[in-house]
Length: 300
Image (cartoon, rainbow, N blue to C red; front, side, top):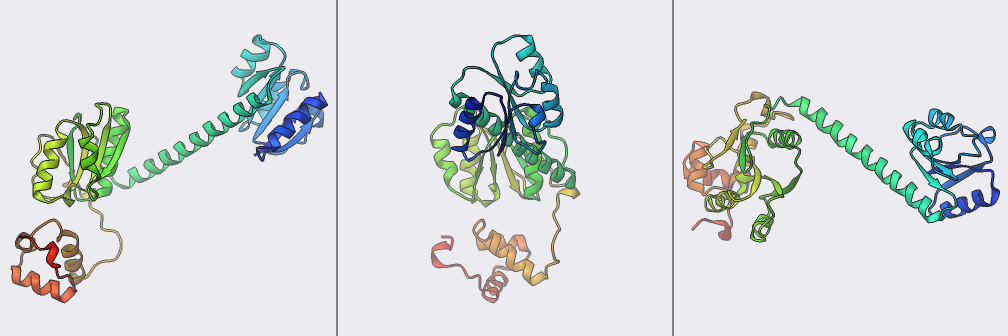
């Protein structure tokens, strides 16, 4: 960070510069406004007396900078009016240098965080326009989002969170962590967004759905089947939620991917039925694609 120090008391200006240099801040000193080289600075620390009370010039030229006024006393002209006209903060002389450093770091962290939030908000707005997901229904958690696209479910959930002013904690059912989370009895203030319900076997899904009835959860599932739960938002019929990007797959490649993706979720009899083939045909395709089940994964 580049810091401009405007102070006509040489000893004070030098002391500030030495302290800020310990924090790897690059400092420049000027006695008054006439001595300032108008470059890009991230922070401007100015004695109100050294600039002749003309803080407007600083706020006009260094609009994006953190501007801290060093003042000798507090009144409307030294604090209230400057703060109303773009000055970031003030510090009263005499002061401990560490207090000044703390202010600088505080405002730097605040601005960095603000920029990061703006980045993610802009990203979400950009992605949201790509998929025309429906407006959230006025359900209170727990409820299920049924869809044919994970991205659509994510956007729906985020829009719901925005509208309700809530913050999610995130879980995926690809991991067993959810069991430990709910065994520890989450607080009523915690709201979870949980993905990949389709990854659970039927008995696990039944246990999970019974568990979340007591908690604030929004859960996504990629499925065309009926979900046995009191509140289900079905957005799978929205054509815009179906993701068809990338190259067109051959039928053989599609079969291989589907068998690989869903083999842990369904026994072979059910998987073959869903694929519209016999169990023998499924076994032959497994052999052809090198997707044979190991003994440990075979259903009993």
